[in-house]
Image 1 (cartoon, one colour):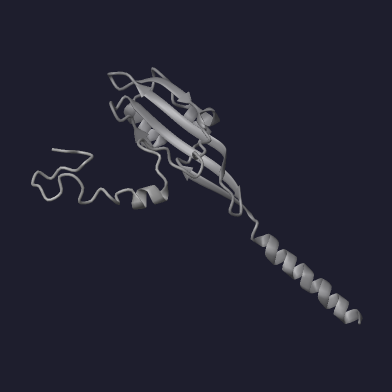
Image 2 (tube, rainbow, N blue to C red):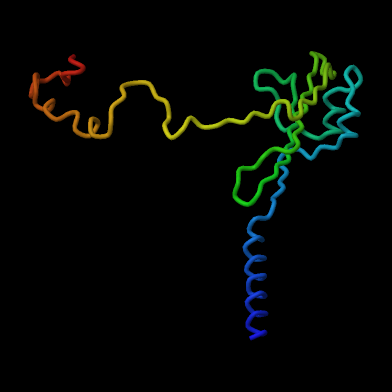
Length: 161
């Protein structure tokens, strides 16, 4: 009797451990591996494009319309099992250059630019008519072979040519 109780407790403990191991916390890092000492060493008026590239490496991306702004992006996220990842730490380093290629400003935007977007329900908003499934399916019954059928010109009753 005592061995059966022990076996049941042991089995329950093993099952609990196996089930809870699926709920592990996941930490992830994406983007630039930031070093605060190197970031702090970039000084406006002193550094230029070449010195920034030697210090920080190539940027994550440059401005699309002119090459006067470089961006270094880094994000750390945390999630529990299959839940949506939440940002824990973010660095969005924005370096502006003047026309001569010297650093004019450095901004570390951090978590202030994190935005949480939620979808608009189950439906995508579209322009046009609000017609149901059956209206779309059976809406053309009676229109085929109506006015103008068999005539050349390719027009329809909705769009006569």
